[in-house]
Length: 437
Image (cartoon, rainbow, N blue to C red; front, top):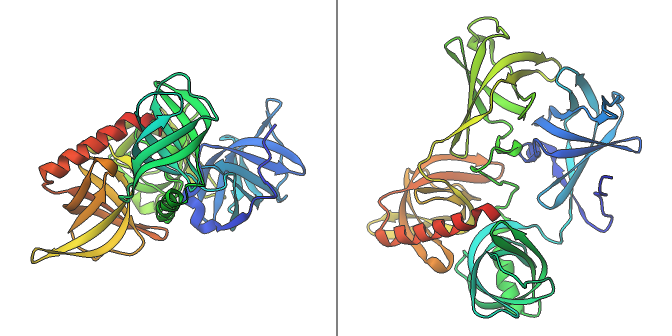
């Protein structure tokens, strides 16, 4: 039985549908509710203000028969929240087993937690009641009331236990000790994960945690990049796609996909001027796209034109291959940072932001305000208790805007040996705990 998603005690938040396109969890389970009956299916694609694509639900091993132009509810989970909206079926593509749904003008969000969790990788040391000594570990995610922490595998840790954590938040706020209660314990590979709730009686510590949480929440989105695994959500709606057909390159945009057996990708039809000849379904084409420093490549055949949705369907012939375009892997994080210009040996701050991922070679910086356009600036940020990176020269490789945030991808330029060692220690620490993130 599908879980009840809407809790009357939770406050609903209305989100503009047009801004939600990139948040739809392609490849994730969704629930359709029609005339009191619930159907399980999978989300396959989206295009803002035009359509959503889902698999035709299967009932008793047969495709479900659903009425056109009858209002129904779509629900799904994402990052600790439930989402729902009303829509209609506008078309069915039986060959590909797809329903075309009217795109929602608004999406309702119901938080299933009292506060959102934000991903983090923060070094910490913990004292656990009943265990001797200080145990090193990491904070994997954080809310304004608690956290998920990890230590190396150990016995004798149970829910209800008491702990004390010493750490330094990435905004350079130190904690000699913050008390917490263990609410759940879960072994994972060679690690032990603990869900904890902070002691609200420690008002000073709670205030400093909340200040950091609020700082991060400004930049927080569902973005969870992973260069490790090719999951359904690794690709991204709207990414530019390059196809090679008859020795000519064709440019389009990705709108949906299904990986594995019977896999396909869905793209916008290319302009007529790009096509060398009429497409032959038997001719192979090579399809490439790039996300987060990874080049994805696959062989495909033209399959069909999905009329009303105005889409091309390409059948995937072989497994999707991926090739790192960076020499080092970026690690997801949320680290407050300040950007500077240098003039006559003096530094002038030009803006503050949040580093969203980092490696030994570079970073992605998010800001609320546009930085002055220049190829070079200097950046300062904390690697928690491992040290501070101060006034390090960077070169901006790419810049852009994503919804209300400005993005800058940069590379470090001739980093000082001291800062290089600090950053190396920090990335090594992150990699050690990355698989639990």
